[in-house]
Image 1 (cartoon, rainbow, N blue to C red):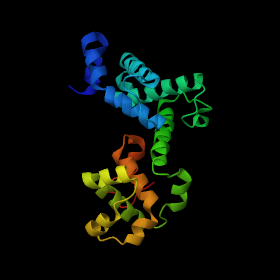
Image 2 (cartoon, rainbow, N blue to C red):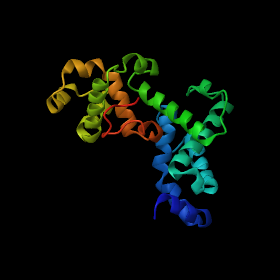
Image 3 (spheres, rainbow, N blue to C red):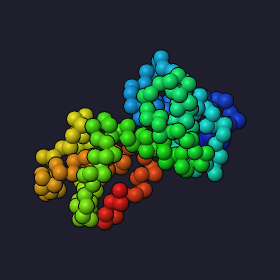
Amino acid sequence: MDINDRVYVAKKDPSEREKLIEEYTPFIIKQLSLFTNKYIDEKNSDELSIGLIAFNEAIDSFDDTKGSFLSFSSLLIKRRLIDFLRQNQQNTIPLELYVEKSTDYEAENRKLEMISFVNLLSLYNITLDDLVKQSPKHADTRKIATKIAYTICENRGLLEYLKSKKNLPIKDLVNILKVSRKTIEKHRKYIIALVIIISEDLPLLKQYISPESEVSKI
């Protein structure tokens, strides 16, 4: 039984609802952490309380027209978190991006996903301006960058190195792909951004790149 089917059962079965919430608490914590860009205390956290309430609310209000339950619940968690932070006047996220709150589900989801992306980039000291300035101008270079990014994501050791060291495993990439060190270093930020999109929960951004595509469209 997939997650969407389980949600329909949980709407009427309190025990299944409890199991679902308990099983997906790590998912809730991850969404909160990505959005606030900080550690979420599992035992004593206002944010976690907000996330659990929002996830429970998502179970009640979900239907198939809203697509994937996990994407829908992620959106609802972030909406409720924004409301909480605004009410408490906390500026842990770029709330200026939410001056006008869209009622359109897809538009709202795109905004929230972009905020998550920006927060993830900040872990590597990368900004959107950096990506605009450093994005490869030639198709062949973008193709190489995409290949490098997928190589990292498909190799657990390389991905763990990147996430722990906050830098590319350049020596290993040169050996594996026979790509020049200069090329990797020149497009470091762009490659890291691609890795983030591929390896994290960013489905709307992920659809713009694929291992089969000749060129990354980002």
